[in-house]
Image (tube, rainbow, N blue to C red):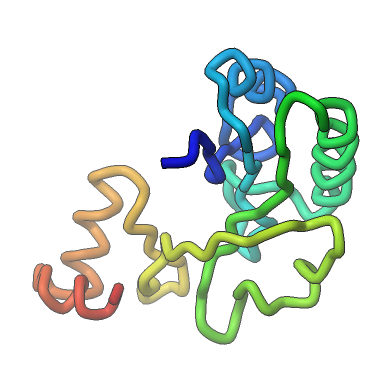
Length: 148
């Protein structure tokens, strides 16, 4: 097994620390590679993704840290991109940047409520249960089928 981590969120999205803190910890734990994969900008208001206007700042920060720590650690700049058909995916032009080394695809939203509000399967238990009842009439198999 290669001592590396490629799924790291920083304070640019829903992580708790500046990227350099994670780099210092990775070096202390003798990792050979660390990839940052903050949540990419998202079309719905939320508290967990990079804002459109700070995506370039995130990429620049990781690029600078990559250069600063190039001897001690392989550093990669990635993003975690939500997939919602016909709305957002890893193929969006916004994510075509030569300084982004990789993308991670994710699915946190499966459907939407009658008013158009997206239903997150990765939120609170109350929201999950509400969506399961309102959208799928309590049929967990139908919700799982839709997710996959």
